[in-house]
Length: 553
Image 1 (cartoon, rainbow, N blue to C red):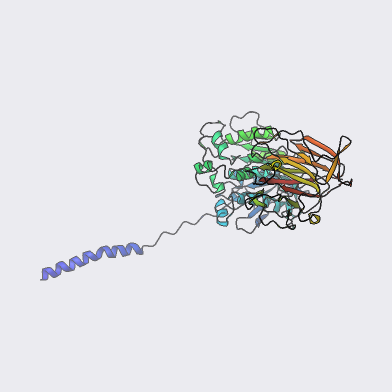
Image 2 (image 1 turned 60 degrees about the horizontal axis):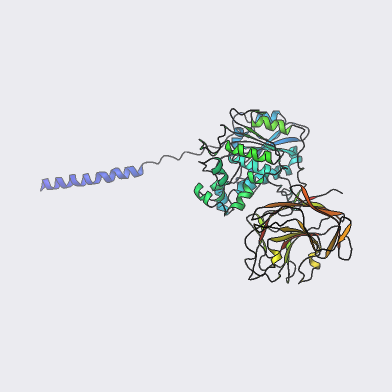
């Protein structure tokens, strides 16, 4: 019995030991989490003149500013950090530009933070890359709004950055001005154009097809559009092509863009896998070719590159920002009639509807373009429509990018296949009859090809009007231009040079394809100005840019 009790006690103690040990294990204090190190500038970077200045409401929308000593306004180096739009901070400044050297040269410096793509997703921003890019633009506008207070020459602003920050810098350099001169917000009225850009390890395109062609083992960029895998990025390219065309630097290059400088850590090898495909100089080589084809100066630097003029991006910034070079386009001259976001400033007039009523949403904004669509129509039934801009104009240069998409709505007239127009010197829409089909105006007719036959665009049509050509009054309703044919859904850039009652010129690629004089109503009254409107004639189309340059008197 004693032996049994002893064994029982030993057994109970043995059974209890693991429990005691386990409890001790549970009670062991947890190691404290390692605190995230605060972001700090390199020791050589002086304290900013102004720190963590907010340019927006989000915690990431802040900047630091260093004011160069000068009695006169100074140029500005505008630095955007890298990190794949997923990390990083403004404190990485010295990786992308030498702040002490810039300040010594009399160039002020700004370094910005911006929203990451993950935060854009949380906020429902589409595509996610829109947040960091638009933040960069807004920060630049904010700085320009502070030009007098911060002693900045708002024309001489050069961007710098690395990797994603380099891509953002190039996007600013090549994108059309995002200024909204009619805005009630003084910051939004400022220009987003640059004097130059100098970047490191830049991704110059966000088109996966181009990436794959240039560098077969490419794997970067899908996250910019909410796609995790590069294979999904490539497979879904067609669906997101409007986004790519809006946010890819390469797609925005035009002949009026500022000079840029690109530096990489290894020579290019087009068509071959790269050790670092995300920062390969293949990006730089293809952008340089594209820039040169468009008349834009582009310096490309990498080990063993020939003819290097500036060894570093900072050397380039100093040379350009302190030079006497004149910009190709003066900031803030072009008015963006379409803001890329909504129909602010525009009002529809649909036949059989009152001015301002568009119950079937013929005109709307999607993916940064004005869409003219008929998804809510059963048939067209001559329901012509026009989208009027709020301000009439007289003397100006109008630039528009358009394209035709999809199939014509059932019931649309045969002549309206891939047909739209820019209605200039138009009548006040509030004076139009409810069932009036077209405003009295000068129509710059936009046409698309059928894939086979020749069909010019930028023709002239004259609803309720006439013109003089070669000294003769023309009563013919439509007159063809001498343009080439544009088939398919390609984007086409056209211009109209409007000189009041004197005359108009239609241009493509700088070439005049039609010219006439003395626009007038059918009763002979000369037209010195009027409204501008975009047309709806039964075939879906899109407008991604509508900008106007007022002409001096």
